Image 1 (cartoon, rainbow, N blue to C red):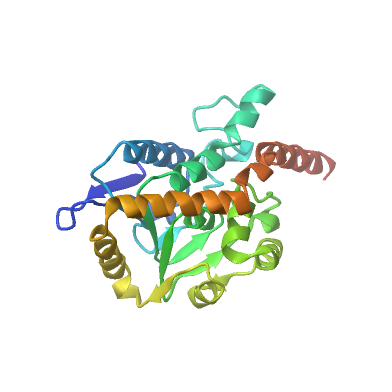
Image 2: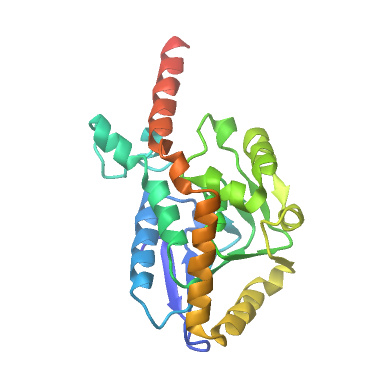
Length: 260
């Protein structure tokens, strides 16, 4: 794969580490990365030896969020190989790529651990909201800047943020676009633990070892039941118009450009 590294741990059988692997781009989420993450999640659904998955980033960042400079990004959902002009239904379908990746991550049957190194911006925070447990290095920081970029908050992110952060905090962070620290995220309940930078992956592996020692069926049932409860409380289906918002945002941006 070009943008994702998948490692099956030999010291801890049952542990898989998935690394976002574009360090020269701060692991920005390109459309290739979307497709590869979806492929990884599909493979994990059929991997009955894997029981815990760690998601982290290569180099000095977890991820800088959506790669707005990549081919197709200006079409708000078009893949790099997509033609410049597509019919409206194809454009609408292309605009759901982030929703599909988030759903795939959330739907992984294994226990998932997000290990946040460096920065996590925009779509990266959405990916983390799909994890079961989240750890961050002390130097890690977060930002949700979409509103400042004139992009609506999509990828079914708002229901997930409301579950993890509550409505008021979600509105504040999404509307102000303020940067927040690992300690802030811990205090607000978005993170389970903040650890010294050098201890991030060792602590994630330590947690994975603890989980691997548990009864696999009990863990699987706990995850599926908890996810079902979360969906009943704040279902992601309420943001079914996400792709339409993205298409509308593109049209409005083009209209503003014509008038300027």
